[in-house]
Image 1 (tube, helix red, strand yellow):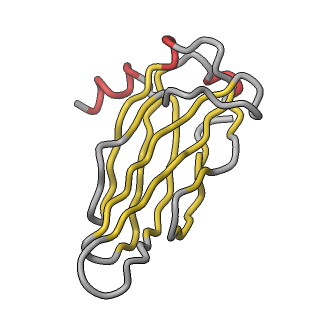
Image 2 (cartoon, rainbow, N blue to C red):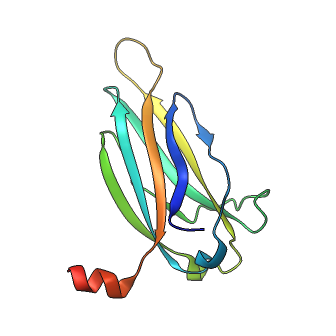
Image 3 (cartoon, rainbow, N blue to C red):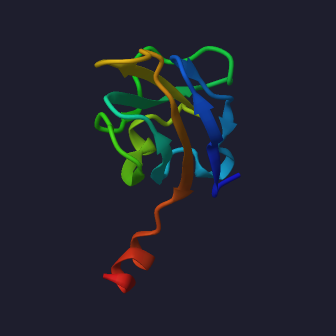
Length: 127
């Protein structure tokens, strides 16, 4: 099932969660997760975590991995070692947004999350 979008390009104004992504043969492997923030307004933050599930219906309370809080557009990547979560067969993105300052307090982020199996041998060749 991977590489695939955990969350396709989406514009959000409030907290939420994306659809379930079935991991298939990528379950239990090391994943490279990329958060692409395409558009933002000033004075706001995005907290994004990845949740795991065995059945795609009920989600673990503790996130598998979380990105550090983000404020700006850009591409950010982290690794998620699913070998510590062998029962996880599905992933989904979960986010919270916040805005402060003057003007409208409605936040707006346009972003996506992409997942692929991290191939250590390929990474060593490019290093």
